[in-house]
Image 1 (cartoon, helix red, strand yellow):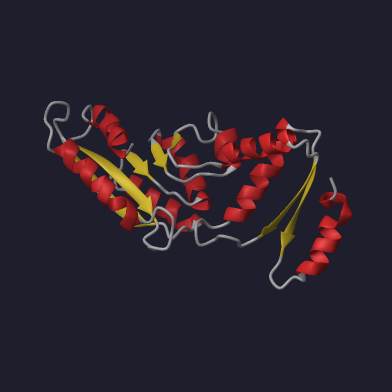
Image 2 (spheres, helix red, strand yellow):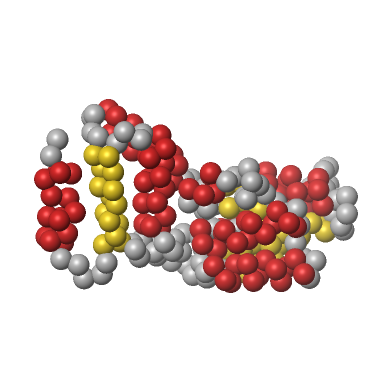
Amino acid sequence: MIFLFLLTLTNVGTTFSRNVNVAVLLPFDDDRLFSLKQIVPAITLAIDEINNRTDFLLNKMTVRYADTKCDIAYGINHAIEFYMKGQVHAFFGPVCDFAVAPVARQVQFWNLPMISGGAMARDFFVYKDTTYGMLTRVGPVNFETLSLMFGKILNHYKWNRLKLLYESSGQDYIVTGFCHLLTEALHYDLLTVHPKIEQDYFRLDEGVDMDYILAREIGHHYSRE
């Protein structure tokens, strides 16, 4: 996928620049999903393959890297720096959803393509033809397909009540806000596709009494058939 994306860029870059410049915006923290260390080998192989061929590329492809820290501010800051220095024709990343959003909105004004292995949140699908028109998602999973799966399970077993419990910082080591974004997607997707299903959601704060929460929030209403 990386090779095909970079190959497409060569047809764009040769018309106006000696080099095709790709800005890679990824977290450098190895514990993060799609960290730089995990992705660099694939990018290096793709770049070497393209630069060593002369049948379709007259120029060279250059890649520059910056650490987003999976943070909403760092990603857009680096993107602006690359753009102002004239060092980017396309963006690879960010991947963390809160880092993706401002960059994906901005590249529309720059008319620059962006590819992300993340961007799992519902908004990236709902507004893909408007707000995020220059973003291409290539990740292995996204939340709208997960919502479809949940909908099919509920229909199959004829369940018509659903209560979503989530932790505000749950699974943040993967992507910041992961559980919040997942719950939001499930809630609104199911409201749209299965409006007859009664559902609600509740955030579990740190240190809560689970016995009390289960009795109050789940109780007999959501636990019975």
